[in-house]
Length: 445
Ligand code: 5CA
Image (cartoon, rainbow, N blue to C red; front, side):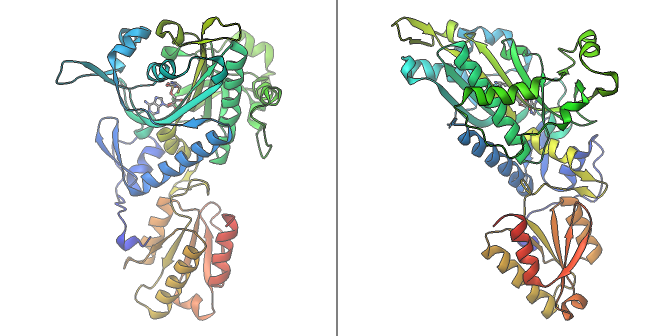
């Protein structure tokens, strides 16, 4: 992409309404624009990051054997009356009436709708287990939408629903999600710690939240410092292997880690040596639930079991805050100058800065680099504008591409361009071909 032809409306001023770094930087870097309270338009660069996160989520769901689909944003109130949640959900639910006076709602979550699909098409235990998920916009009329996409009213969520014959099967589905979430967040460069939590309006008594430690997070958490040393890393898990999934879950849940809803001082003090006790703040980027027959029973989602009896299916639901992750990533990766994208989610693989636009030699070198990178399947953002060098660098630092190739007349005379890491700030001089090769190597292409 050439910056002169792109739509990147960066702001010079720091927006007064933004209280935390991610909100400020998303506005300044031209990623989002508020449409109304807690509702945002995703401008081209923000949209690219959102799509990158979504892609990683899809890939890891596929790896775990989960099946993608798409349900609508608007749902019939009647379904929610069946489960009893139409009234119970309260003012957070946006209720809508159509021209025929029928009650609809903008879905805050999809347990009812998926249960309706299931009961219409599945009737035997032989068709189980089944995990269906989608990534779709949700609406919750939060009393205090704030921090930009972190607590929106409209937000993008991956929500998956599991159907199993019995509790053991459903708990394996729960564990499968647990493991796949660890992989998903680590691929984005994030450490999300699974913690015991409350289930709230989704229900059930088995739930974990996945939390990214951050001073600006809305959740208060209590944990053993040793949990921060555990990683999934490169280990490959056979998702159908119940024991293998359970081993990972056991490892990640052995140490004390709870949100304030479930925290108990006495247990904390008994289980965690004083030097390792931590109390802090964190961003909830995902939550998984096992709630048994809470929806299947009242809604009549039953299957025949091997003995021929009709039994309600055991269900769970599993969510990832896809749009919130954009903010969480920025909270985790930024400095004074701007964002620092991890390679896994960056909107462009690298920037190309032409220090003297209009100079035949630098223009040609930049075009050459652009074409070489594109030929390798990479997408650079080429700043081909007439701005001063200082302004170009400031924009690149603000938008946070992990690598920058700077092309100037002096270096070019010696056959060199400069490759700079946004993370470390370190630069290296090398030939344009070597710079393109290095970028390709970094991204494994
Ligand atoms: N049906 C279940 C699991 S699919 C569910 O709705 N779970 S949830 O309520 O925990 O939401 C899943 C994730 O969505 C949360 O972990 C959080 O990361 C994200 N989320 C929830 N509310 C908001 C919000 N107002 N703004 C942005 N993200 C949110």
